[in-house]
Length: 503
Ligand code: ZN
Image (cartoon, rainbow, N blue to C red; front, side):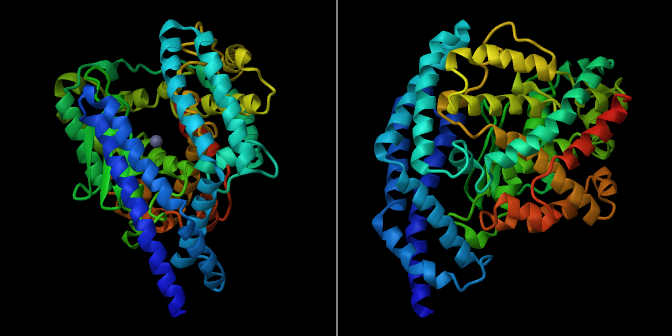
């Protein structure tokens, strides 16, 4: 027992070093997107790469393997839910994954994606898929090699998905998506036939500083802790955590469109609240982060959409917003504004999609990338396959590849298996929120009073504090009694948008 404790302390000390190095690299990456002068881009990439390599070396050192081998039998007697057992389990997972991938393959992927990213930019600007195609082919090849190297039982896509959504299987995602698509496609078509709400009010002038301050005031009400976090500007909003004690949000402001800064701030704050809510005792261990991208996205979507686009929310905040922007909103009724921020309309671009159509954009990408990896779809045929699916799901056909298969950066980064986590997050958000509504009496009234304490406390206990001690599926099962399901989300959109669109 005493020996196990000592071995565990030795392992934790080594892992703390890995965590510190990764945090240092993350600070440099955050700075790169927020404050760094453009001239530093070249040297910064080298600095980050040096630190990440060091972290990788420390994590994959033989000594870590030896410590894990000694700890495995010792922790097998412990409760699997204990921090000790979880630490050994999660470290083993990270260690094995990192050791399995040969340096040659990691370097080949990094190099191929560096070239692919440049080619993708040019291809998008010139609307020439052919410019990007050979790079995409190479990345597909390398990802197949990566999947084969990591190994799988059922599906080539499993080990790629597992990187972002530990424990989730391709077959599970396919099953959930199939049920979802069957219900969602007709719903979207029905909404598209109804008159669209007027959203011009959102495109009036909104003073950038006031937008910034208003967003911050709302996330302060949510419970975001500015003693342990801050928000800065960036071209593409993101959240990064250097520690439970230091969580960074970024957002962008458009003077003539209310949505990006406001809903972007709520979205990123949802990610940030998750990171701030992790048990501080787990800090500087591999357990101190969100458990999966899907669960992370569930938290951002919950605050952005289920709270931030809800009627109770705007009952409370709209009068405040009107006071903040009297010249733009004094003549706009609350109901008009509420309908505007909940406008649903099929569109070509994923990042501009509303909360109802968004999942269809994701399913399309999931199906295509799976088909490419399995060799069922040649890269050259991707644009046509993309356009056909767009037409089937959303009733729209892109007039160029720039607004079709070339719109996202993800594939150029070599990230396959990432896309589905966006839709998983949407589904999880509704599954969790549905349970919160049952557990917390009067939650709507609290939100309509600008009070979020009970909701945040519930999320802390059910989701946040565990960090990576529980998988997303374990959190869902323990909290809602079931693994991932699409029906709570479907029930939510049917009720809300059925009422809004008179279906
Ligand atoms: Zn997000």
